[in-house]
Length: 338
Image (cartoon, rainbow, N blue to C red; front, side, top):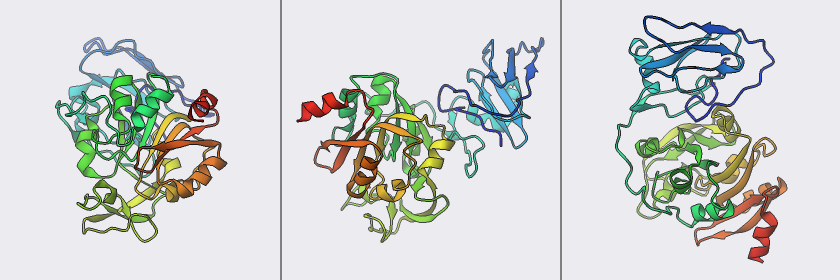
């Protein structure tokens, strides 16, 4: 299986492969003045990024179109790549061009499909606000990391792109990048106007388990009623707007979306399904320096067993803050709270 790494999530990182990767030179086209580059184990290094060109990578099981400004790394042995004029690429290149975005980035990972969603050039209202979270999560993270710039977050799940967002400030004011996970289509347009990469998925304990998901908020419980519903979960409220989703484990989700092994901040709020989705998560594989989680009673034991330290409650909404034992300022933070 050929995989394009970080194609639309941000800067690409090298992928290690034991396979011998066949190099394919990309020749300059004198008539079109195409960019010059080389397809090899180290990726595609384009010397020029002329407007109107995209990169076409052809592998045995998929064809991928990318803007030439992206670095493509591949772990397959039979891929070729070449720069071509965008107007000759056909409709399959739509997601690589301005005005359209793909909601996921695991270009060929099993189980994912890639529609192109037109979002236009409008901006989200409320982007001028400093803090947007419900219980001060964004401010707490900024203070913990002492205003760190260019960090990485995972927002699971994101819900509204602005209102009560724990990650918008990190993205807009501090240059962070991240993965926003949200299955509710009512939030797609807004989230696609943000910089974070959108994955449309429902995190679960196993992959391909069918669950009911409520799409609509309720006057009694607001967005807390929008999520997985069922007798096994805290959220049992059905309002007639449920649809069926297939779950994906958080591990597969992070693997396929190329989440880095060390994440600065995980915002975990999946409306009562947190323990169900993370009780068997491989915390040795992914480390989160800071976590805020809603209703963590059962999950707290799992987190503490995997090297996380409970710090404090945030606001009055039952969000708890945890830091990994390797967090550089952990002792200082704990001393300040003592």
